Image 1 (cartoon, helix red, strand yellow):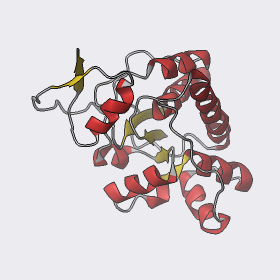
Image 2 (cartoon, helix red, strand yellow; image 1 turned 135 degrees about the vertical axis):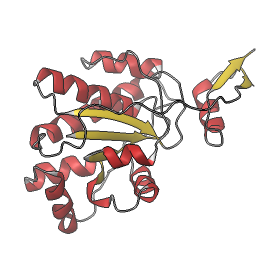
Image 3 (tube, helix red, strand yellow; image 1 turned 90 degrees about the horizontal axis):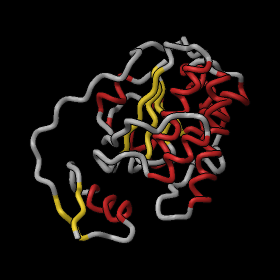
Image 4 (cartoon, one colour; image 1 turned 180 degrees about the horizontal axis):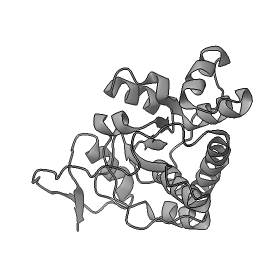
Length: 219
């Protein structure tokens, strides 16, 4: 099964989920379980946010070698299961590639349906959702701009939702791909130099919402 995790900037929530899934697959000897992540307003080329990286390491996974990527239709197409961090991001993913509602959920939504109904495949999750009804507190908020305690809380919640979901699913039920396909080489793009901000990730996210290339910082 190949899982795609989606958040906003792809520097905190979805990388946490991706790297925890990699660690789970390694610990349980599941070579068919693979994962990648992306953001609907990604900070393209950025590493994992430093506090989020510490959270990942504290949860027993690796934060090394990561670069943020913008969500593309081909990422959604090759995923067996798409898990978004909020309902709004879930809906934006489904709009980006029509016909994918059957495999697209929030992380909280998928976990609750799986554990409450006994659904073990993506198809069973989709069928069970029809009668499951609305889910309270289905969103995992972005901690960027908040203190370290908020990052820890978000990491703990992602782990608390993700691990039971992986335990519940038949992880061999979907095998569209075993490893993420390499991204095409981007065309040369200008680098935008912005004044150094005391809150660079927040400023970069604002720039990234209208730009599709990396932002650098200058004094």
